[in-house]
Every structure is written in C-alpha cells, then in structure tokens.
Length: 114
Length: 116
Image 1: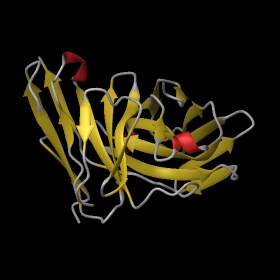
Image 2 (image 1 turned 45 degrees about the vertical axis):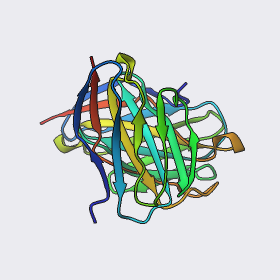
Image 3 (image 1 turned 180 degrees about the horizontal axis):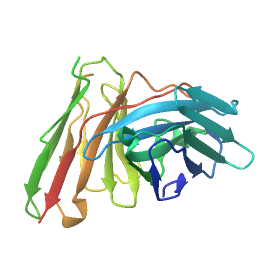
C-alpha cells in the first residue's frame, strides 16, 4: 500500500496564485522528496527535506515537514502555466525493511490557468 | 549524457506473451529500480537493484523478473503477460543507495504497455 497520501487530488488555480499540496505518511522517515511529472513524461526530482529539517526553499518552492504530524506540504509561489503537472511526494522510510525503497504517494494534479 | 533510456516507448501484447522492457543508464549509477504507474495508485515499486548482480523485490513483484548483469542495464521481463499488467512502467536510477543519504532518483520517460 502507498504510505504517502496526498491532498488535494486535483488543484486548479490562476497564474500568479500560490499552490499548496499536502502529503501525509505513516512511518518514520529518513527524508521526504517531492517530484514533478509533466503529462506523458517521467518524474523529475524537485526538492528533498531531511527528517531533522522543518523547512526548505528552492526558488519558488517551499517545503515544510512536521514529523510529529507525519505530514509535509509543498508550496509553489507565483505559479505559472508551465507549473501544470502532477506532483508526488516520496518517502525514504527508516528501518531495515525499507532499504532500497522509495514509497510514492498518489499525487496531486495541478492545473494553472493562464 | 542521455540519462535513463527506456525502450520501447509503447507496446501492445496479447495475453500470455512474454517480453522484455529495456532500461539503460549512462550515469554510472549503482542503484536502479522499476515502477509501475496506474491511475489513482501513484508509483509502485516492482523490483530494484543496489548494484550489478544484486536484485530484490519491491511491493508488486509477481509476474515480473529482473537481472542486473552490468551496471548500465536493468531489464524487466514479463513472463506471461496478463491484462492486469497494463500500465505505464518507469525505470529509475540513483547514484547509490545509502541509508540516510539523499537517494534521489532519475527517471526514464516510461514504457506504455497494453495487454489485450
């Protein structure tokens, strides 16, 4: 089963607005990653946050992590039409049985209207 | 560098046929993996390899075989295709897999497989 649960499943906004996506997970993690997938393409890594970090920034991206609530959020500021894509969180889970495995959420489909 | 290359891009099979999905990377990555992506299910790990000669099962390994004879290649074999294997398949690689390290994965463009 997928550990990462994302919401909303779909998000539609206007260019220039901010987009926030959330990810919840169930077990302890080493880190949490966010990936983007454009239609018909492979996934591309966006940003990683370690379990001992609370916030990371990269350009227009801001990621937060709350390990007490087992949740993360991805904020895209000043969105552009080119940000239209699916966004996935992926957890690198702590523990020996998780060695070698990233667990992906079901994704949020973001549509940015010009 | 080409990155991660998957072939073919599209494939249609009949139930019971076998085939091999190819994956090659030119980044000298030790870690490689195969996922399938189905609507509403996200990506699910099929098999992975932390180095040449080493493979292990992921979340949904049944009906699939892998081998890793070289660092560059990680083919995925469907032994007897079933309609339930209709999906989009992604290969990914990472420099190496280290507990607690970043383990960022680089993805191929995918193979879209239909089993009739």
